[in-house]
Image (cartoon, rainbow, N blue to C red; front, side, top):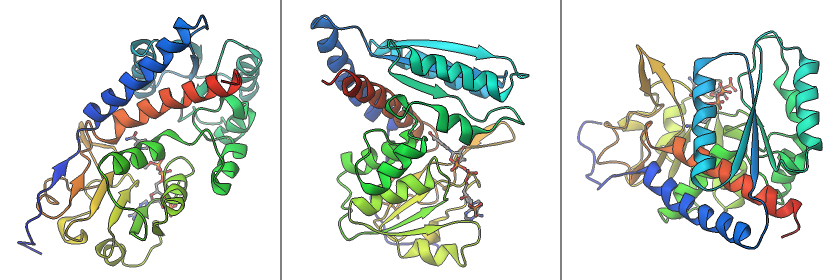
Length: 290
Ligand code: NAP
């Protein structure tokens, strides 16, 4: 499709949105502290020396600091055993001063992330990856849900994208993004089609969608002629191509077609960290019975 109907496309400023929400979180933390309570605390665990993971952790700790939350970092070497990681998690589970636990993924080869997620106390599972929380999400009663899906939903909510009866296509079915975001969309009364690497004619599914969430990791997979005029397009994907960050959506290409599109920079990323902060506050309030 060369010249589709002209729609005024809003490129979502995820950072501005994130800052708005962080201000609300900061005020909530301030109220707890003013009432004489300690600040909420996030504990992060980094295994190995992957520079990208180290940088993500730094960003998360800085974000905590800015809203007045405490954080701690436990570093384990690349050679750490599964038992050492599990022991670290057990110690954080037992520490009453810790509200949220996040073990940065990917873990070094040979370590089992599912067993680690299972070991985290569900009440402190701010990544929403413990099977108890994943199960509660399916039943619609989870307090702690994976952060990126929450960020996607918050963007749709804040831009007043109607979900009731909408056709939504989620590309990707990972435990951390694709599956939970599909569940959340369905709970918002969208009709959800979940696509993946074996889906036949992905383009045709997308062309019918009012909402597309792309969580794949294939650069510029979603092209202009995949998008229905007026659709909301959420690009979760992040891939480095020749040293440059690229998303799953051809952001420039969908201009004039999509109603909103999130860019791969300052799009979903800042919202993911913000939802981690929100989950930490939720975990703190639930644990304290507030
Ligand atoms: P993942 O575990 O690798 O899952 C990718 C999914 O995409 C799988 O379900 C896979 O299908 C599907 N897929 C792969 N190639 C496909 C194709 N050609 N057509 C249709 N589906 C295809 O990845 P993830 O953890 O969900 O992350 C997805 C992307 O989001 C990555 O780029 C990641 O870096 C990014 N991400 C960004 C944020 C953020 O905050 N911005 C947070 C998390 C992840 P199968 O199941 O059939 O293999």
